Each structure stands twice: as structure tokens, then as C-alpha cells.
Image (cartoon, rainbow, N blue to C red; front, side):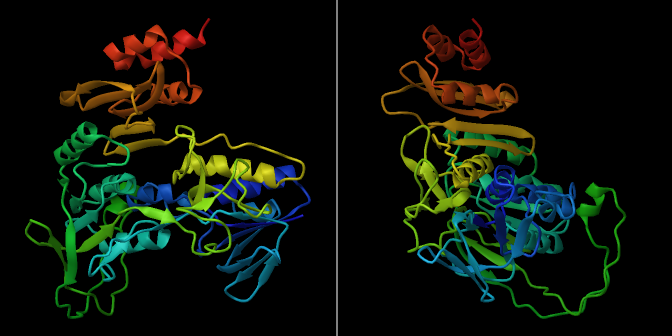
Length: 446
């Protein structure tokens, strides 16, 4: 049995390892188009502040891990798939045949259609290659704009601030993390970040990016690392002198505000499923459409992770959930169903986000914006940066949005995912949302 997995993120790696456990004699090929070993994008912020090296971002840190499991790791790019011939063609002309194929190509960053977004001083924060650009061009005292205060933007926000830059966050919505926090909690998070020295401009759009005149000038040798070395505890080492460096800055034009002159613009305006390889090959909508077994419309081709448009636990519909827990879950389920004689149903992923922004924890679960005809209750304590909003349908908790809650966050997910009927405890939670642990235990302990 020949298994080919395209994508070396969490979904692909988990699937490969699960297949090996289930099928000791199968041929398993893991295909990725980046030069580094499989790594976690969620670890990149920790790399930016020097908490981990590049090696520390790797999903499997043991040398030769995949070879020891007899998993062939190919660092090549797939350019076409033929379902009828069961073949994947590489950019170097190599052809892989498969009995079962898993699409786990993840997401790709989006960039808004704004003039100047292709300039050299504009970078994403999605790959290790991006991280190297940020480390090289983002030193203490530099002026940096982070465009986008969504989930990804807030993950890297703290890393940028800890590098000692003068950071301004620009978000076109009226609050931070608008796809996981309501107006009250998102505004409170903005106030928290501003109290930590970060400028946050909400309801603000970037109109254009231009570049000052840049005349290349010689640069002398300088200590490398900047704040990276301060956080790692290592002494700076001296880099060789560069031939030239651009002395100009970027000019960021903002709607209704004065232009800003910055050293670096980091774009974090969202991601989209990376379906270009399979568009027209399998059925797609926003992502690759899959059934309850994570199969596409071709029974020998599966999809998992950010690319898969699978069942949503809360709505019963289909959606893309570009979060690591879903990718891991998909990897296990897809591998089980690709194994001989095995069946594992995907019953739906729950919308779940937990975020640490400069020490303030925020979270959202399920239908956090509410259900039609449902009830809601709120605990709002802005002086302590504490906020809890619970959403009910009848006496079932269906969604939650919190800020500053460091305990019992998992209980909210448990209450939602179990679809537990709360009975009289609904009214108690309506009066005091902080009693969610009591409600959970009351229904779990006889």
C-alpha cells in the first residue's frame, strides 16, 4: 500500500506517524516544499524573541526521526495531481504513485490589494524564511507597523514588542481579534496592549505603501541578534560587514490619519486554504470539501487541516477551521480511514481559539456570537481586564467568549461539546457566569 501525504505541518506529520503505527509495512511519503524539516508555525513568535532556536520550532527534534520510522521525507514541490492515474508530479519531473493520497497543504497568507504591498520592506510572519527577515530587519528602536490584529497578528504582537521596537498595530475592524472577540472584549484587549506601550489603531485602513528614496550605503560590522541575544542569554556575535543596505524607510498612508514612516511593515491580515494545487482536481468551495471520513469526491484522496472544509460541530454545516487542534484531529482521523479496514467518523470540529496577548488570556468557543433566539449573559470587570460572555440555546451552553480567565477555560469547551442540558444551572450561570466549574461538576458527579 502506497500512501502519499502532501504537506508537512501538524496534520501531515500526525497522519504519517499514525499510518506507520497502523500499517508497519506500508510505503509512506511525506512531501513538503520548504527547505527546513517539518516545523510549527505557532512556534515562530518564540523564535523571534529568542526563546527557541530554529531547531526548537521543529515538530520532531530527534535527528533522523522520519527515516527511523521508515517515512520518506521529500522536500520538493508538487505541481499536479492525476486522480485517475493515482499520480503526483513534482517540479523536478519526478512522479509519485499512490494508493491513498492525503492533502494537507495548509494555508497561505493573504495580502490586501493595496499598492506597495510587494515592496521589500513588507513581510509576512508565516514561515521560518519570514522570521529570518524580521529578525534581520526589526531591531530595538525601529519603527514597525503590524497590519492586522486578528489571531495571527496577536500571536506575533508580543514577540515584536519584546524585541524593543516602536510598534503600531493597524486593524481595519473596530476592535482587536474581531473573529473571536466581541466589541467589549476586543476593545478591552486593545486597552491592555496600549497599557503595555503598544499603539493600536482600530477602524483604520492602510491606503498605500511607498518607499523613500533609497541610496545603497556601505554598512560596518555590527553585533547580530539584538534583543534575540538578550532573551537567549548569549553574547552578541559580530557579523561581517554588508556590501550595501537600504537607508530609506516605508511610508504608510492611512485613511483619515497622518502618514507613518517606518522601518518594516508586517502583514498579518489573515490566511486562506492553499487549494491552488487541487482546484479543479477535487471538489472545492472555500477549502477542499470532505465528508465525515475526510474523503474528497475521489475516494482514494483525503484532506486534513487548514485546507479541509469539514463538518462544524456547532452549526452542522461545513467550514474551514485553520487552527492547530483541528489539524491534529484531522491528521489522526484521516490516517485511520486511509488504513486498511479502518473507519473513523469526523463528528465535527468545535470552533476554539485560546490566545495569550502580552500576558492577557482570551478565548472563544462554539457559537460565541450567539444562536438565533438564544440567551446570553455577561460578566464585565474592565478594571481587572476580566470579561465572560456565555451564549445559550434553551438550557444548553453553545458559545463563550472570555478575557482574563486563566482557570477552567477547558470546562467551557466541555460544557459546549457535551451539549449538556444545564436545567436550573442555566439560571445560576445567567446570574453569575463565573460559576461554570460548579455547573460542570454538578452534572458530572452523581
